[in-house]
Image (cartoon, rainbow, N blue to C red; front, top):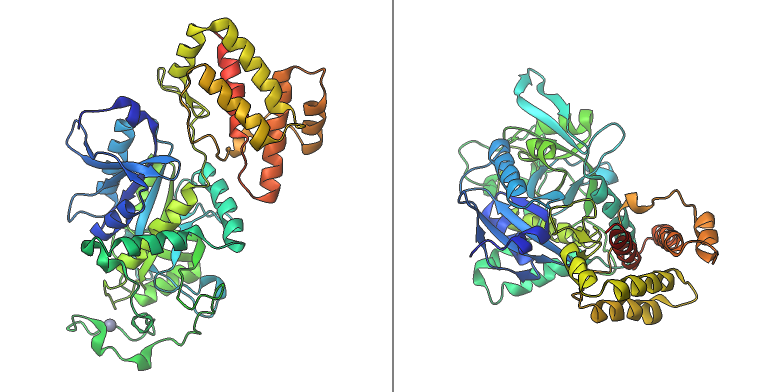
Length: 462
Ligand SMILES: [Zn+2]
């Protein structure tokens, strides 16, 4: 397909995966799949929509894995898609569980998400190249995880504590899809008895191709998971913390225990190091084994699916537009393309300016109910000036948009003061909506206010 620059510029999320099952899981999460694209230099990408984000899925050439090829994919995506804001590394990893600690009682099929804790940056490079007689040595703490995503994580966490989780639905949907697509049938959850955590001093016999002959007498005893929300079926639990990234596959229970004990890592993988220094990233890993010598691949597809479902759930909490990115006329003002605004303004400068001012006043007027009074005004404005209606206007704002130093009280005072400049009132109204939404942990509709304010500033600057 020919390069569609406008489409490319709407892509703000890179999603990188390694294994074929991770790639299948990513595709299964797409709400809409656009035509696949090939870059000038021959890389193939899958493009599509997940929730309100356009996503590019990059994958490694068959057979390659590890840091260097993954960084290459990340760099190429960044060159090709100039509005990429962050990257999700979504796939499987080896878990580092501690059955005696409920905060680390990780099971197969669970999901681990990189999140800074204390002085740790979310991902720690454990480098086999620096191997000492004690095992891995910590090489470095990698750049902190993307701030914006951390904010989304906080919102998602509080949502997960409350009502049912969207990620469970995404898993179920993907499994239901496999009825029509037999090639996806491998996404089923393996039987619980296949999840065995062997004792550290019980290595896998080197000649045995799988764990069929490995004895249950040498497994760690673990409490069965409690039912959650009355569901008998096992659901992945989500753990947040530090992920270890190394150059080699870890196949040692002893080493795993050491990393868990000394660095507190929850799982180990091989790709995150490098990408985190290339693009702001978040690492989401489904646990498919316990990083010991007992390797089996049975849990890989399900673990990949669980990680992908979490990542999709998270995306719905990440803000859509990239206000700070300006590339020619393809910058978005909140959610409306700058060149569309330019056209509308040029077609009718006086009416546009006047309507915009009225709209700004209405958007800060709290006596009007948002959904059935202020929002229709916004839509009328879009229609009148031939601006494309977009379904993406309801979204979360970034932490940085709590600008202007408002507190809830000062925001309310400014907003209600009719003597003030309407733009200032609009900014206060937006800050107030942000503060309330943040306090109550739910998404709100103030990005509309943001869009109006940006449009206003833009037009004034012409
Ligand atoms: Zn075994």
